[in-house]
Amino acid sequence: MTDTIVVEDVYKAYGDVNALNGVSLSVREGKIFGLLGPNGAGKTTLVRILTTLLKPDAGRVEVAGIDVLKDSMALRRVIGLAGQYPAVDEQLTGRENLVMVGQLYHFSRSEAKSRAQDLLKRFSLTDAADRPVKTYSGGMRRRLDLAASIVARPKVLFLDEPTTGLDPRTRMEAWEFIRELVRDGATLLLTTQYLEEADALTGFITVIDEGRVIAEGTPDELKSRLGSDVLELRVSRDINLKRVESLLQPIGKDMPQIDLQSGDISIAVNDGTRSLLDAVRILDGEGISIEDIGLRRPTLDDVFLSITGK
Amino acid sequence: MAQEQTFSSVHIGQQSGGSIFERIWWNIHDTLVITRRNLTYYTRLPQLLVFSTIQPVMFLLLFTYVFGGAIQTPGGEYINYLLPGILIQTVMFGGTQTTIGLAEDLSKGLIDRFRSLPMGRAAVLAGRTVADSIRNLFVVILMTSVGYIIGFEFQNGLLNALVAVAVLILFGHAMSWIFATIGMLVKDPETAQVAGFIWVFPLIFASSIFVPTTTMPDALRTFAENQPVSVVANVVRDLTLGTSTGDFWLALVWITTIWLVFAPVAVWQYRRAAS
Ligand SMILES: Nc1ncnc2c1ncn2[C@@H]1O[C@H](COP(=O)(O)OP(=O)(O)OP(=O)(O)O)[C@@H](O)[C@H]1O
Ligand SMILES: [Mg+2]
Image (cartoon, rainbow over the protein chains, first blue to last red):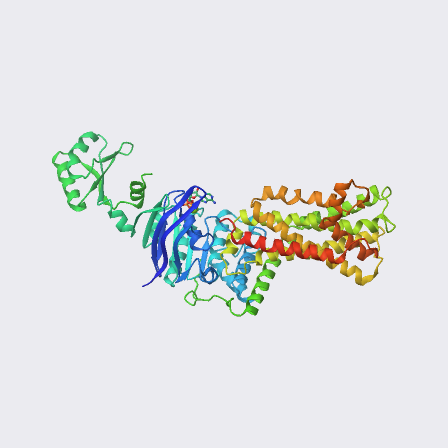
């Protein structure tokens, strides 16, 4: 296993805004890597550096064994990019856009045409293929942009918030296609605002904030940083929640959280199964009937909120 | 979405790189792909072509009939004096679309897309300026035809007429690189609307395009007689009318100099665009 993307101590400032403050990370070949972070964290800046669009002020960047700063032309042959905003030509049709990109990768005209046809089909754009892109909806543009990014079957693909603006069904389809790409050997770096998406897709996540790496690991590792499971339960409406709270406090790590509207009680606990049994025993002993009880793993949202403090 | 079977076979098309001849060939290839893209715009937006030809035709008619009687020019009929000048004006005004178009490409992220592709570094701009030149050729032929209808005539033989057209197109091409440079600099389409035009007016009106410079005040006259638009206009006029008011070689020097300065500057701007 080799590292396909290596970023070492990269700095980038725009005027006096320090967008990247010494970011280092590495991505294994054939994996999906998630880059997460709140707005303005520096995700797009890093993607632009990795795809030769922007020069870092300092640091080393290597993609597919190629030094990004020294041999950008060689690198451009093996990468694909779908930026944060779709970059497609409004006046051209969807098909013309893809054929043009194929030709610029030096496909013959007939190769470029058949590749465009495949991709239009794959992204459900066949019906709109011969309409100018200015008549496309936002989601259609996004799909066309994704298609354009894989015209040359890149070894390393960069997707900056690829599913923003897609409806749920199309998003699922995009996930499926992203998984397929990686199954076939591509390496993928994606940024996203959807933690659910990072959880579903990525093998490894780096969270950055204010241009610094603030956490990294597999989704499970990140979640277990909270050190616990979450016990959730609901009691019948007529029970005083304050009483339940004080009864259950000894088994939790912190105070139980009570959602006053639904009456749901959630408690971060260390040993899920034992705590669950404890809770049932305690409440049963007091004659309080439980309507619903269960354990869940903390979600990435829990993690994200706790580490970025936002 | 449909399945795709061939993903494992990494296919990158034919490689660029290699020998210098291959590189030159791929640069030309990429330029032509972009040229085609820009020309497609005229088929998608026919109004663009209509307005960019109606306007100069209108100028031609207005100047001929409104001023024609009052202006004394060498070479007989005013239309014979005017047409070469109007052609240059048309080429200059048309160039502002390059400024706007490139600023649009930049602001919509298309330049980013192109810059992430393994294509020649000059191809996006060269494709634009070549497309401009093709449009210019079309407009020059159209306007000359209209000119013929209202009394214009080449007075100096077919060969010189063709050389005149060649000078015009070369001048327009060199100018396109200035327009391209401005587009890459201002970056935003609204600013480009203004920035593309503003510097063109003094060059066009303080020149020998519409009227001889002889009656202008001294300082203005010195500028008007020596600036490139007049130099080229005089040469084009000499070629079409058989007069000898300009300096052919000086015009070529201007065209070459503009090209040699602005093509590299524009490409340099492109390479560092948005960074
Ligand atoms: N061209 C620019 N000029 C000046 N500042 C910029 C520029 N581009 C980005 N920045 C700043 O750099 C920082 C990082 O921006 P970046 O776009 O990389 O964030 P991001 O993580 O992609 O955010 P988002 O989730 O909103 O897309 C921000 O503070 C932003 O304001
Ligand atoms: Mg971003």
